[in-house]
Length: 116
Image 1 (cartoon, rainbow, N blue to C red):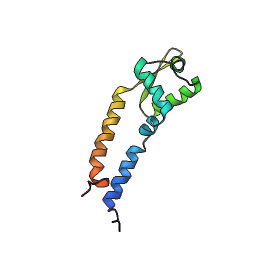
Image 2: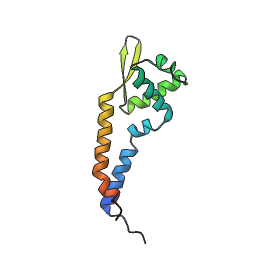
Image 3: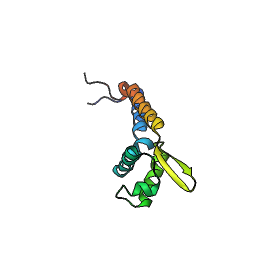
């Protein structure tokens, strides 16, 4: 018979799931958004038109993906006159990855104890 999880194990699992089911991770879980992210990493900042010319997506699709990435703190945008330019927010991106890893390490003993 399987043993019942302790309240602390349940809390650990809930916290771990919150890390994995965050807007940040969900934004990166889509292959099309990863492709938009890759283009930004490779080529640097660009507007929707420039980015969509390097991708197999319509401008409206690229725009929607950029919105999700921006809402998740992965991408930032600035207005330059009438043009909105998007770029990777490297500091926030790396900081969020580090925070996720740090919190996951902290929770591992609660939700995922080693096999005995």
